[in-house]
Amino acid sequence: MTDQYVRVQHADTGHQYTVGKAKAANDPKLKIVDKPSTNLSGHPLPPKFRTTLPSANTGAGSKTDPKESK
Image 1 (cartoon, rainbow, N blue to C red):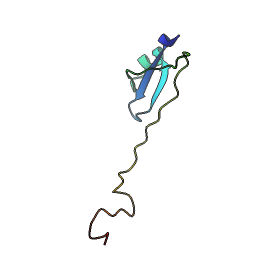
Image 2: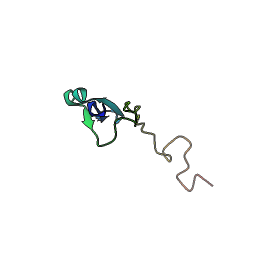
Image 3: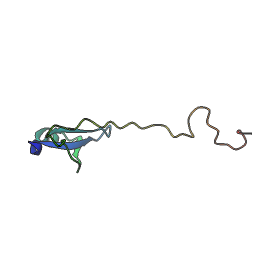
Image 4: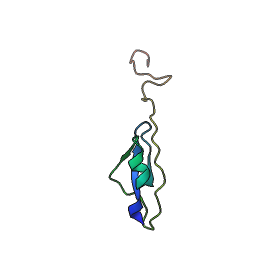
């Protein structure tokens, strides 16, 4: 049962999720990654979403300049 699923990463978003082998082979934006795609019971793993956060020292109110922090 686990042979029909693969873990993929979407090229645009970086999200990882489990799809069937045929879907992965036919979608050029999906890259197969070398990770488990199912749990021990053979059920597909949930998606893993990727979020890009701004750097901690570029946000509003940041005190990266030592002169400002005095």
